[in-house]
Length: 254
Image (cartoon, rainbow, N blue to C red; front, side, top):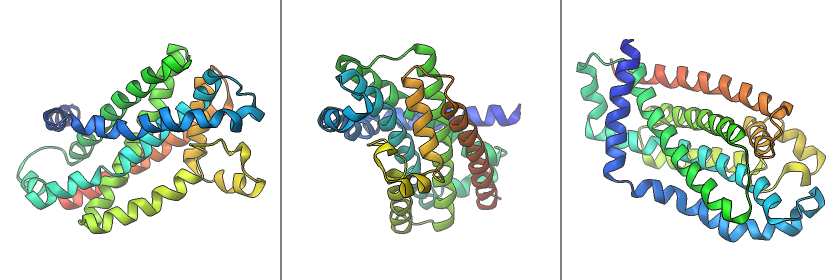
């Protein structure tokens, strides 16, 4: 009960700070919108061999990958705000409060999840005029998968930020991790186009399972094995990330 109350208090404070400067939500949406408007139309000839011959089918393949992209990158770079709080002494002052150390992490991560879901809804709505159609139940399950990804990546980012305590170290580290994750996830183009050896390597990338699962949900194939495999893998990794980052918070706030 105390954990839930403390998490809600931290979530409220962090959300209030975000709402005071909502431009960050739209900054986070701007690049995906550019991909949606300027890159997706180029995919129609490329996706034709997979049967995506209409705009609706192209966006049904591309939009899920784009949403996973937002979840990954939106989470991985949340640590910069925490470093600013460390420098301002916010985390140091938390030592004298009775708030749960786990709540310090969960409140921030839940704020990040809500921000991600707002951006995901905006992208989905913008894709509707291009012919995207998806059942509400499938869409909600896809959003659950995206929320788990955002929870995992933001927790990892906060944990790493507490370790390095420097934007100069965090930026290249996150970029080094994000680039191969992006290329091996089939986010922009399905891995069906990749050679066999690259697909085998991508099988070890958990985000490729999440992308496949999200695409299956947007296609209305909720019974596809990729959906439940992606959910299972993401749940386990999110739990591990939260536990590890919570321990990092506990060490930093004693």
